[in-house]
Amino acid sequence: MESEKLKFYSVDVEYAGYLRQFDSKVPYIEYPEHNKFFVGVVFEIKNQKYFAPVSSYRKKDRGVFNIYDGGNIISSIRFNFMFPVVDGVYSLIDIKNDFSGSYRDLVQKEYFYCNQHREEIRQIATKTYSKRLKAETNPKQKTFYDTIMVNFKLLEKLAKKYRK
Image (cartoon, rainbow, N blue to C red; front, side, top):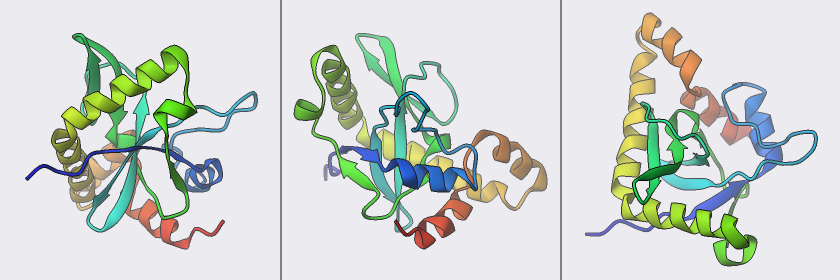
């Protein structure tokens, strides 16, 4: 049975800022001069929706799914920085109408590649989540993971409390 296609979403700037108050590894979207374009995939892990950002990061690394075009890495999904979302804080992206020119071409390539590999993406997300939770029981591992990824359980609690 084929899994449901992934879709690209944007996330509310205020929501991301709210979470970042409690975990500095939540990615920045808002900058003084402009807001960063921020797109990602949304999927469920243990009955919680998660947003995993697509990034311009182009290195092979743990917790990263590289997106290729013609053998070259063009972007990635960074699972160490995925964070929980609740209804109302993310919006479906319309690639055809929300973007133009070469940027639309890039986002379309990312979208098609991600959907060709959607099962692998879901597996990496779930594995990353599980590793982080397992590390919570080992002080040495917890300290390490605290430096490289968001705290999923903390952010899940905060997401449930969020009010716009």
